[in-house]
Figure (cartoon, rainbow, N blue to C red):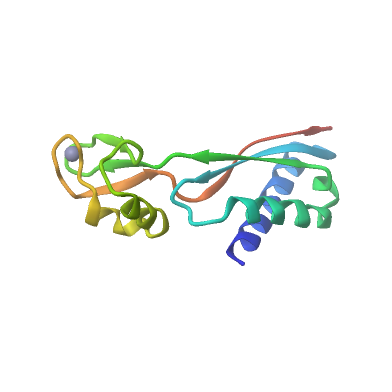
Length: 134
Ligand SMILES: [Zn+2]
């Protein structure tokens, strides 16, 4: 259900964007979603394609899903590091994926070893671009 609610808000945002840019037809929208966002990409895409019919301007819009890799920022030394490439077991990786808050239990800043960091990238869903016809 989460995917459907997200898909609806993405389409609404895209429709608002196209109104702001005076587009009559929305052709393509780039949708960025974070690696740590616990949603099913397939269901999300399906939901987008089902729901767009409710919005005349977005009826034929193609949605391009762009996955954004997770990046953490150390609060102690401001070093930024990706989730990828850090040493962790497969189970840990899965767990982090679904419960980002738990990353603190497994990960440490590779530079200063502080466990105090925040998620800089890789959460949430946003629209990166739209293309359409005026
Ligand atoms: Zn650090």
